[in-house]
Amino acid sequence: MDLSALGPYLGIIEIILAVSMTILVLLQTKGSDLGGFMGGGGDSGGSFRTRRGMEATMHSVTILVSVLFFVNTLLTFIALGQTA
Image (cartoon, one colour):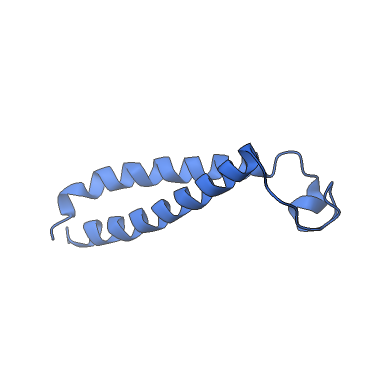
């Protein structure tokens, strides 16, 4: 399968997915203090809590975007490796 023609497009998709994933991760940690960000303290007292509503949706979308980012990275490396 020749993916070399898709190399530039996959690179653009890679940038879009990277920016999207960064924004999603930063939105999820919003509202936490530095102790909560590092894994302790915060409003939750350092314990895990159940995600509900929009928070659960953002968590699922973040996982989906990270999987798409990983698959796109592999395809990009394959496509750009075929041009040499």
